[in-house]
Length: 227
Length: 287
Image 1 (cartoon, one colour):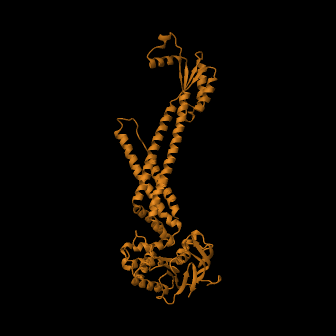
Image 2 (spheres, helix red, strand yellow):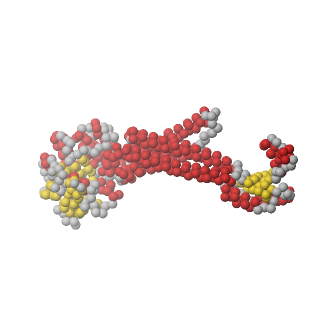
Image 3 (cartoon, each protein chain N blue to C red):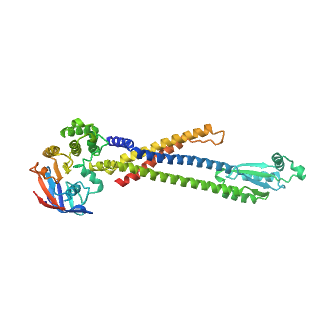
């Protein structure tokens, strides 16, 4: 729990957000510091994805506020949201890659939207794809890759813009156990490089792989425990 | 600049990725542009024809037979000085009799033993004054002259032409606006289909931090390109139709279909604008 005057990277202040009959969250108070590894766990429908959506401001609190560095959900204007999202990397269970373009183009898209120069885009994309072990798949299309490889492309796309935090929503949901282990090792490596990682998952097996991670347990839209 | 070329490239790629929905948009826009193009030419030529008919209407000023040459000359000079007069022709009583003979084949002296035809002035007006209101005003002034017996012009016919000319204009403008609106709506709906099929691109762009303008730009470029493609096809179709009319149908009709390069450029611009507005309207729903 964090008082309002403390400066953390991500702060939730009494956040409530419910929408229709879908899962919502109530009275959330927590903070995440720079470089932390955090698991948000709980059963399906507990509100894990809602918390992530609140962080990248796809949803806004009905009560309270979410502050990510100097982006405040209670003050932010619609045209400022893209600038927040350039600081926040996101990966999803379904990868959300564009099948009409190759790996290089999928990853480079992140940088084009931030108006990088072509030379820098090329250098960064090659570097990050080598880091995630896909340097040899650069001109493949997502449909030609395995699930694990597709998730790596998604990670590369999220990391290439050097975000301060990487959000992963059930990142191993579509992957077999061996590939899931590889992916968690990759996320741990990314975290060691200084990027905060927040993983929303209902798979408790993953949590044991990162013993030093902070654990936020949610149930029925409320935080039941933070360790 | 890099971003600009990226967006242009995305727009071009979008055009090729849009598949059947894109082709449908192009066909809709093309049909509309062909109709607008033909409609414009038909309306333009009809108005020119009506204008020509109007310009052939003269005012006949019949003078008393007792009018002296000096009085007639004075009146002619007076009328010539008026700003609305294009041309004035004096027809003496003898010339009128000769004209009668040439037109009807019989000498009026043989029929009536005298010449009843009065001397007259035939007045042509300058183009801006070829309206019933102006002609009526001038006729009233002329009728008050002492040597003027009667002023005649084809008032009713001119009125009909004037009314129809206005009607044609209104119909053309209304048809033009209607067709443009309908095709923008249809094109926008089919562009919406192409955008809907690529909403994953929009979602992904937004997730990685693209501004709305950045997301919008490729779709606007794509819509404009679709409009331009449609216009190119429409221009080719219209130009070929005119070529066909002018080279193969001259034996059947005396009409020559002519259009300047400005007309074709206008169609290209209109097509591009229709595509742009259509895509602008379509993308609004997704941002």
